Figure 1 (cartoon, rainbow, N blue to C red):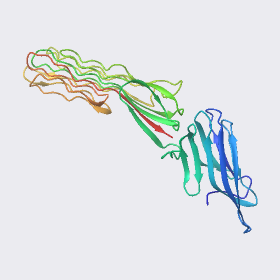
Figure 2 (figure 1 turned 180 degrees about the horizontal axis):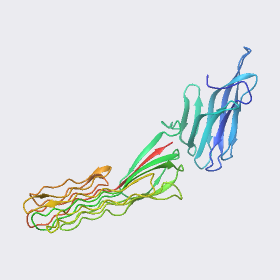
Figure 3 (figure 1 turned 30 degrees about the vertical axis):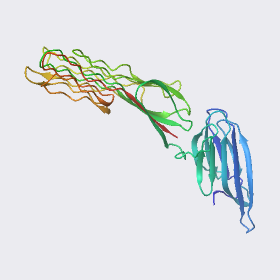
Figure 4 (figure 1 turned 60 degrees about the vertical axis):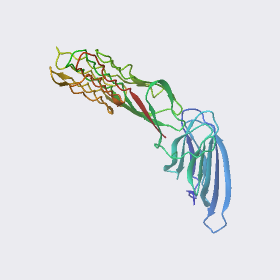
Length: 347
């Protein structure tokens, strides 16, 4: 037996719409009436359309003469935009959600039958696995470079963004034996989560890691990592880390590059960690390691012993390591890592 409506006109199966736009939904319900007197069941189909936003329509009402067995339900989105829908059953006092709320893309079909339960199909009638209710993870995207646009799916109602700013490069070394550059700072970190509009396109920009320079301070991470996940909302911003300092025998230790300032407009906001200082003497020393980020490892420190370029950061948002000098040549610090935006979409 499928969804049962009690033998009462107050027992109803409703289709509720969201307020994003005026919908035009087609629905069809197949049912059987199961009399309590032992008489043979009778069967029927009710069809209809509904075009009122932020309201509901009774797709089928119970009857006082028999229990109504709902065998099949089909709902089709016949509009040019995605629609938020919810299917509920009410006994006249309490309404229970049977499916949703969920977003139906353009041309999508929601189908229920007694044997297979609820299923969603796209406009080409491909069954959408994992599309069976509110809050399910639909997609994960990693945006690792550049400025671009990102469009949420038609079935996406909420999202979580994990973001980190770019890291600064490690400090270089001059052509003086025993010098060591300090580590670059890490980018700031943010998480944002909340409701989003299905199909909304947001602008995103991922900061570029700083570049090392021979015999000079490391480059700062360029630009902030930003995203605007809600139309008209505030932009989430993760500042970049600063470059490490060039090795200098007159300044011991050489302080590492500053971490990115505290992120803004995220649900969670944090600043980046500063790069590690370098230490040196006439015969020994170490360069400064790059600062780690929550999503990346900083460039490793270097021991005194050879003129060596700094180690690059790995992962996302971490700082590059400082260079080491032993001889008469210069060397550059390791590169900082790019920032990143990780987008998780939920139904």
